Length: 195
Image (cartoon, rainbow, N blue to C red; front, side, top):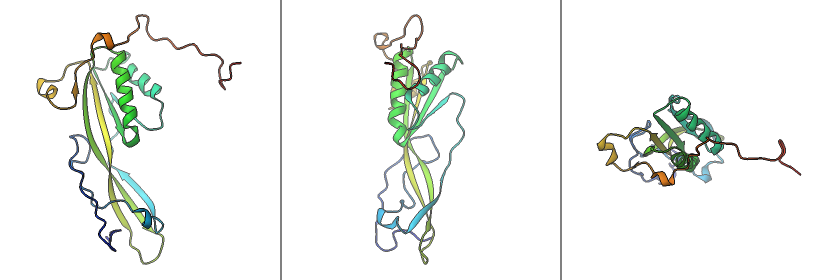
């Protein structure tokens, strides 16, 4: 299979190794996505990702979803379904949102142990040529990802000494109202005018 870099050496340096979860164990790309000057000659045909279905106590955070819905789902897993641990997964632009949801949860539910793992997940792209005489190109790019596990039970001692473990917050930093959560007062319904 021909590479996009046949004309000159535009190699991408390797980025190291990833965390222990996900399908990829190393960040060494077979070939990088098409540089900007070649994109006018190719179009993206397919993008594949090795991805398993979500587990029972797993929240997959996306860039588009509101933080409030992820927070409500995670709270329901802990309080209504009686889950002892919940995993938050975020990839790419959703990493900051997964971290934000985790921090709010830790401040609303007392005694949550946090374990964070970072890594990368491979995306296989297939590029088809728009001009005759060019070959089809396959490339693999790696997307940063985070897996944050919040647990009511403390992990084993060997996991507590590893990087990425955070003990529960002190009770002075946890806000848990006695009467439960109440919706804030809002004026009006649809449209938000409220005059």
